[in-house]
Structure formats: C-alpha cells, structure tokens
Image (tube, rainbow, N blue to C red; front, side, top):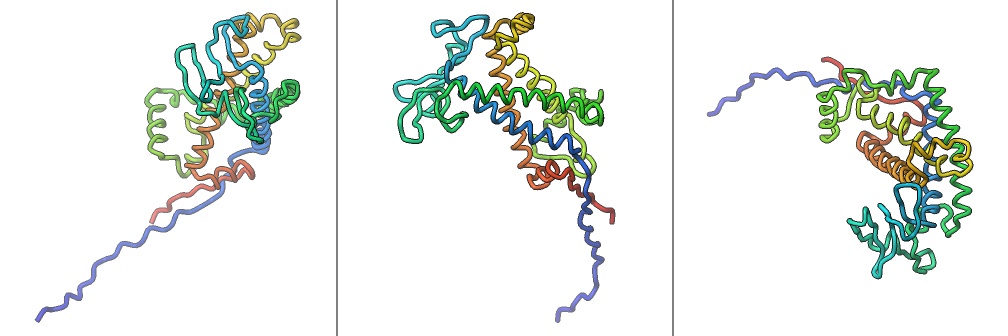
Length: 286
C-alpha cells in the first residue's frame, strides 16, 4: 500500500507588488508650450500644404519656374498621381497625391488632397493668411520656451546631453533598448534618455529655427532688410526647399514621438503632459 508523504516544502514568499508614486515631471511652462506649439505647427503644416499646391515643385538656387530643373515635385498621371525625386525616382501615389477626388467626388489635379490643407478648398490667399498669422505665433512660442527654459534651467538640466551620454557605446545601447521596446523604469523613467535629448534638441534648436529663418528668407520684405539670409541659404528657392525639408522633419519626429508614447503607455505619458505628474513603479525588496 502506498504511503503518503506528508512532508512540506518551504514556499518562498510572494514578491510584493510594485510601489507606485507620482513624480512631477513637466513644469507648467513646458506643458503650455508643448500643446500650443503642437496646435500651431499643425495649422502651419496644413496651410503650408495649401501654399505648396500653388506650385508643387522644389528647386535649388535662386530661381525656379515650371521648365527649370526640379529636385522634387508632385503631379498627376494618367492613372493617378506620382512623386518625382531628383528626376530619377518616380513613385506612384495611388490617387492620394497629385490626383484625387474632393468631397463631391470631383477629380482634382493638385499635390495634396483637400483633407490635408487649410482651407480645404483651394485658396492660395487664404492659405497664406493662415500660414503667416501662425508663423508669428510660432516665433512668440519659441522665444517663450527658450526664455522660460533658461530661467528654470529646463534646457540645461533636461535637454543638454552629458559627456558620458555622447559616447557611441551609450547611444548604441539606447538604440538597441528602444528597438527591443525596453523602456526605462523607476527613477530612470523620470529623466530624458540620450535619444530623447538629441531628438528634442534637434527640434528646438535646428528644425524650428530653420523653419523660421527660411520662412523669413522667402519674404521680399525680410530680404530687403536682411539680405544676408539669401547668402546663408543659397537663394530663395533653396530656402523654400529647406523650409519644406524642415517641415517634414517635424512630421517624421511627430510620427516617431507618438509611436513611442503609445508603446511606453499613453495614459501615463499624456497625463504627465497635461497635469505634470508622472507615475513611476518601484520594486520593493522582500
């Protein structure tokens, strides 16, 4: 007859659940600038696409007309639309860019469709009014952010990379962690990593100033008062091309930024940018 082994085994205590606490991550000035800047850039992008529809070609140099050599253009084809880059790469757009249908089903042969522009109906004058009005808002927001960031040390404390962070080994380690969706936790989550510092710094100190300065370069009034801008950017058409590239650099940044927010936990991330408070989890020792 089989005997019953009534010996007991020691059971390890269960690990306690992570301890949660709130950390004040974003100051009010940063939060105000973030949302106001996002709305301003969206309006400027959509009104800028309307302006681009008036002449959907980009050039390098001081001059540009229909028969001049382009490096980028969007136009219609017999079956839809296409994007041509450097007169070498001809990419079909499937009826989204170059040739599309409006709200009434009428076929249009303009670069960007109605739902991506301000106003939705074609009006170069209205597009310019929207664009130039919010351009001054963008300038005011940029000055506000830089002054506030210098006073509260947000720029020096959060955006300025440390020397050890700029080593190739450190940067590559962060790239691999992000590729594997391994995001910082605990106290590390309260600080910007090197990829955030480089990308945010690129937006604040390169893309936004680049958009503002090239926008001024395309203005005849600004050229008359500051002719050195034409020299710096290599002509009005080159400035227009750089303006376009900076704008779509911001679009690319926004897509990556929103993707990271979703992957890292959208509720916690968005709440921190609305209220300032970020929830972190810490594992307690047994």
